[in-house]
Image 1 (tube, rainbow, N blue to C red):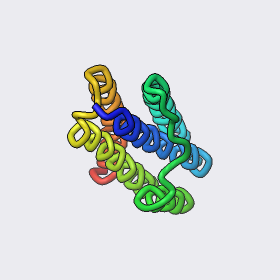
Image 2 (cartoon, helix red, strand yellow; image 1 turned 135 degrees about the vertical axis):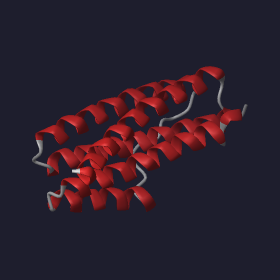
Image 3 (cartoon, rainbow, N blue to C red; image 1 turned 180 degrees about the vertical axis):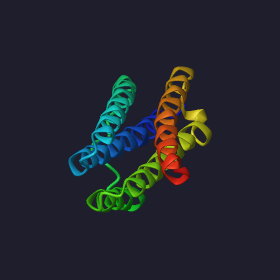
Image 4 (cartoon, rainbow, N blue to C red; image 1 turned 30 degrees about the vertical axis):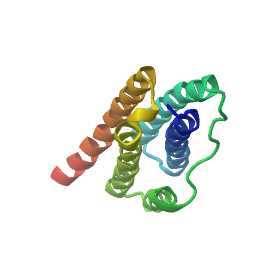
Length: 152
């Protein structure tokens, strides 16, 4: 197992959690809907928990944890779309943007589990799989709320 590659994989997951934290902190500031603020605070808490576990692993390997977010590409557009949706106060658009961001988080976890499996030890695989399930629950909650608006 390549220690540097393991740290790189763990740091990619730290970054995706940083993205979620920053995105939902922005969303809390922008929305006036109390139930969404509460939901987003819960999602932030989940990502902070995941990040803490990942940072512990990076530190145990003697690495330096990733700081910041993926400023470029997909996430920058996602959170800018979210900000626009929030500014327009369109609940469905807000939830659509959140689901898109959650899809990207799931994709990052999938990549770590499927493509980088050999670079993770058993404990790391178990931790990452549990985190993926936790974030999948967040994703499904957003999707369910969004779908309820479509069906209404």
